[in-house]
Amino acid sequence: MGRAFEVRKNAMAKTAGQKTKVYSKYGKEIYVVAKSGGPDPDTNLSLKRLIEKAKKDQVPGHVIDKAIEKATGGAGEDYSPARYEGFGPGSCMVIVDCLTDNANRTITDVRNCFTKTNSKIGAPGTAAHMFDHAALFGFAGDDEDLILETLMEADVDVTDVESGGGKITVIAPNTEFFKVKTALAEAFPELDIEIEEITFLPQVEAPISEEDLPMFQKFMDMLEDCDDVQNVYHNAVLPE
Image 1 (tube, helix red, strand yellow):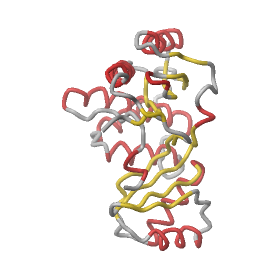
Image 2 (cartoon, rainbow, N blue to C red):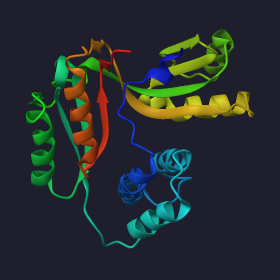
Image 3 (cartoon, rainbow, N blue to C red):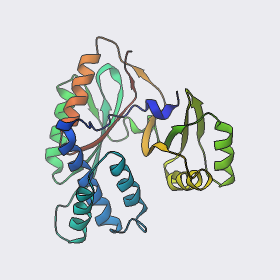
Image 4 (cartoon, helix red, strand yellow):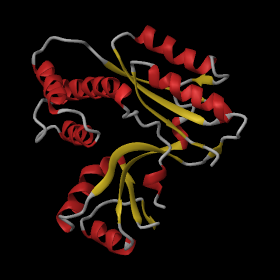
């Protein structure tokens, strides 16, 4: 199966009980991106990508519109990005991306997630150097040569194109996201892209033992419960 369908990212839960939290996280990120780059998705490509991602995750239009309106109003919270890195249960490497309006609160909350699960938070760069910041696309198909040829003709810098199990994964540098998206859309207008995101892909894997699995799950649950945490990336491979 293509790697896009096995990305080791702690996806935001979409159960009924978690929807409010998902909406809040998207709303915060849309607000920050719209405030820094402008409220027009046609000129703010980061906002355009985020809106499309939010819609795929079934975030209601009024949540998106409210966040953009709030950004154009001038007032409001002053969020800033924060990234924490370290080693989780089973010695897996972890990147935690946050948006915060209170750095002291956020680092305290994130550090508690590490310390209460026998994990170790590290200095900046502890884990990130072992991940590739990549644009990732996944869709149904099996002709990887056709996809690679199409992208190369469009002058896209492609890192890898993989196929397996009826799925194709395209990996490119994170800066090539929109070039990949545009090239695929123009060459294959009917293509249904199931996964399209900028993410961190691990260069090496860390198998999690059955013994470490409960603590790893607790670690991920605790991070998910932190209001300031937006995304968690790791290189753990869970036992089947």
